[in-house]
Structures are given as structure tokens and as C-alpha cells.
Image 1 (cartoon, rainbow, N blue to C red):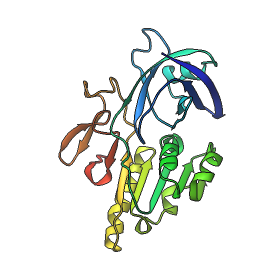
Image 2 (image 1 turned 180 degrees about the horizontal axis):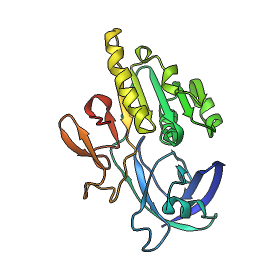
Image 3 (image 1 turned 90 degrees about the horizontal axis):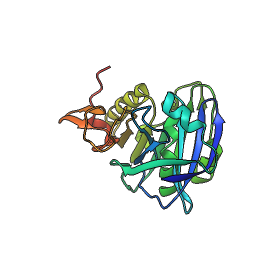
Image 4 (image 1 turned 90 degrees about the vertical axis):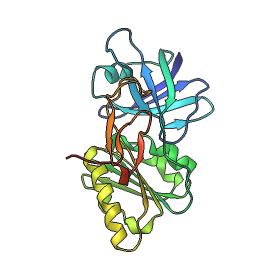
Length: 234
């Protein structure tokens, strides 16, 4: 059990949750959170936004009953955490770009802390949030509201690109990585998939991901995959 330190509303439906406790994890990993009894049935997977001396932080978007309950938690409230789970972003060297779309910026803040001096690209459909927290960690920070943030990224300029965001954005990042090869430099593009999850430990098939070597599980084998491994069906 963990104790809520703060649960701040940042934008419409977007919250920054800080919980107290001796928690850890690596870039791109996640926890399963629960602050209710029998219903909703499943815990909610949230990527690690930041780890610090007080505990662990999450950035989340209210999309259903579980996250709605999380949004109502006050400081001092208790919730259950399980984790950290998953295979996250690798520790890399070279020139790095971090590209996030909407709530997909959540795991990239921890990446920015671990890989200082990265170029950071943050895209939002309507309202930007949490951008100023990224600024001190970035070599350059690009914020795009209402457009396609990937259009700002020159894939041939980087050795590694970490991407997290909605499905169409991930597919586009895969294609841009492939296209960069024809220009003489193909970076290693890593995608953090936001698949629905049930158990978080690979015991079920809810988060199945189609890969070139067969079906894999986002919770246990990911949520981070090399872009070239993933097969997008739409």
C-alpha cells in the first residue's frame, strides 16, 4: 500500500499523481495501480513518470471508471501499487530524441532525467501540459499544439529515438525510421505501446502485440519495442 502525497489536475482530464514509498523502476516501466475494491475488476497500468527520494510519480488521463477514481484521491489516501513491471527503454549513448504525444509524454520525463541533453518533442491535440518541467532537461524543447509533432523531427539527425503516443503516431514513427535509412542514416527507434493490460505480468493475452517473430506481450516483453519488430495491422 502507498500513500498519496499529491494528485494535481494539470489540464482537462490530466492529473499528476505523487505517492510516497520506497519505489523504483527504470525508464519505460510501469506499475499497476488500484484504489478500489472488487469493481472495476482490473487495476490500471501507469508508466513511471518520475522516481525520487519521496516515492514515485505518475501522469495519467481520465478515460474510464478506474482513472476517474484515481482522480478523486486526496493527499493521505491509500492505494495499492504492484510493480515495477515490463521491459522499458534501454540506456543508450549518442544523440537522442524523445518524442511524446498527449499523455504519451508520461514516461519520457524519466527518460529526460536519465538521458540529459536529449532533444525533446512534445505534441498535444488541444492543450499542452507539463512542458515547462521538461525544459531544464532538454538540449532543445519543441512543443506542438494542434499539429503533428513527428513532422518536427529529423530522423536522420539522431542515433536513438524514443516515442510514446497514440497508435497512429507510433506507426508513423516506424515508417519515418525506415525512410531515414534511404537518406543514409536509420536511427534505432523505440516505441512504448499503450496497449490495454489486465494482469501486468504476462499471465494473460489481453495486451498481445503482433511482432515479426510472432505474438508477444506488451506487459512482459514490452511495453517498449524496437519499431522494426512491431507489425501494425491498421
